[in-house]
Amino acid sequence: MGRPREPYDVRQADRWRMTTAKRDYYEVLDVGQTASQEEIKKAYRRKALKYHPDRNQDNPEAETRFKEAAEAYEILSEPAKRQRYDQFGHAGIGGAGIHDFTHMGVEDIFSMFGDIFGGMGFGRSSRSRGADLQVEIELSLEEVASGTERTLEFARNDVCTACGGSGAAPGSERRNCPTCGGYGQVEQTSGFGILFGRAITTCPNCRGRGTLIVEACNRCRGTGRHLQKRKVSIKIPPGIHDGQAVRLRGEGEPGESSTSRGDLHCYVRVRAHPFLERHNNDLLCRLPIGVTQAALGTKVEVPTLNGRVEMTIPPGTQTGQVLRLAGQGIPDVRSGRRGDELVQVMVEIPRRLTPRQKELLREFAETEDRSVLPESKGFFEKLVDYFSSQDDEGKKP
Ligand SMILES: [Zn+2]
Ligand SMILES: [Zn+2]
Image (cartoon, rainbow, N blue to C red; front, side, top):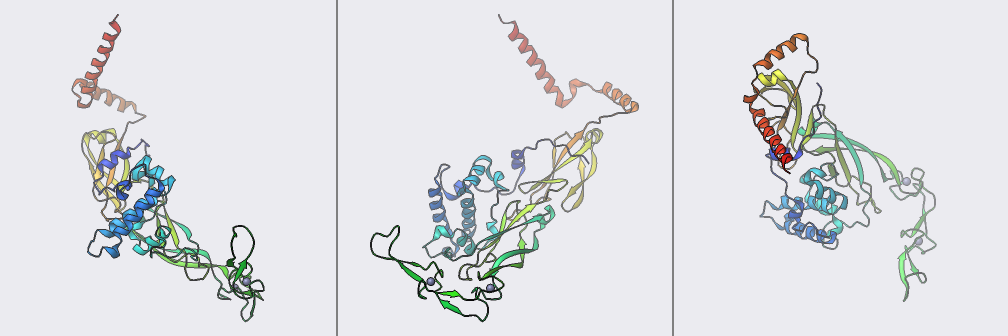
């Protein structure tokens, strides 16, 4: 089945779309379009604190507002994403790697933007936190519609299993650091930035430990870390968009103290479907049919994510006309409400005709009365007016 690639008007699809519209990000954060990065940061902090569910026990809307603000902040705080959003709206950032906040815990969101809430008693300190990791998975459109669970296998630099992260060979002793005498800190009496008095800094030789390894661990060569395979299972919520990420808290690499791990971000790529194209939560199927089928009406089988569905093409269907299969789209990642499948009929004019078919068509043409064809009547009348007005223009001196 050939697929004519006529440009598809996305704005038109937005008009068809009956699902709940997403709020404008600037409106969500209550800032103007020209707000500076600092203003956006402040606005987000204000909203996040205002709607933090802990402070809004009796307001069931608070969590939604809290997550909405996080999403708005993620987009508007990054110049590249903000620019795309300014230019194309919500449709422009579908594939720009945004997180799925709807299914993320409130505390996770708080720690994700931890730097903003630093010193406010929320989130984790970033100093000792380990590195975040990224993985990418590919899903079919069917998996997107139903949601799915995947096992992720990845390698991360983890605490050495032989030495428990100390870097010292098992059973070997550590010796006192000669630089700091075992204190882990040194007094700096000269150097840049020291004008008055003395400065105490972490010992550069033992990096604050106070001891040095005598015999390095074989497995990690004294680093205390080595690459290990890890398997975790992850739930992907239905309706997730291409480029969105699901975050697994604490599945990243361990921090300095081996305790505070970074996170794992699982980015989703959606494989192209041979017949269906996603537009927001609607699916678009371009369906080629013959001239006679369009004129006389017919029943056709249309591919959907739930198998083949029989659809009636009414007599007199025009090319480009859109028919709707309600509820055959993708569920909204927030509300769960399903979009529709839009079937765009593309009428194909036969390129080659047999002599018999030509004869029949000529015969058919003779029965046609151009002046009463409903679509063309208005057009030809306008055309006559247009040419006559042009003639008048030409006659003017
Ligand atoms: Zn080791
Ligand atoms: Zn030292």
